[in-house]
Each structure stands twice: as C-alpha cells, then as structure tokens.
Length: 59
Image 1: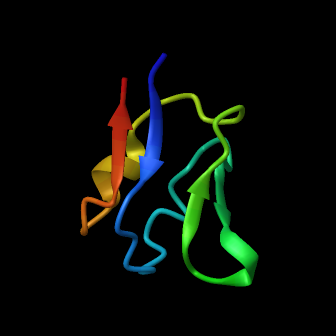
Image 2: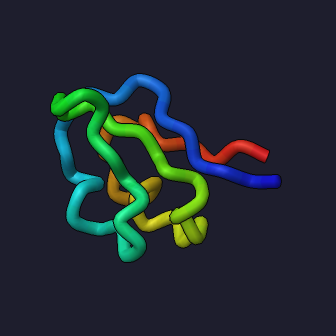
C-alpha cells in the first residue's frame, strides 16, 4: 500500500492550498503538517509542490 508521509517539514505551508481532498492537517495548531491517509487519493500534487521535498511517497 502506498501513502504520503511528511519528513522534515519546514512549515512553509505551500501544500495547504493544493490538496483537492483536504487531506493535509496541521498538528496542534502549528504550521507542521500531517497527511490524513483515509482522505488522500495519492494525486501527488502536494509532493510536487513542496520546495523542501518533505513530502514523500512510501510503498
């Protein structure tokens, strides 16, 4: 099963507006993010948008 994980988020928030399923959630009101896997459709838009390469696809 594939899923997207967050490793090394720099809190730039560029991924916020690109997720079509709203599967990106902020942790405890901070700018750090996590992916809600049940909502993610693996479109990879967030992965491509991340300037820090903090969003990765894992298999």
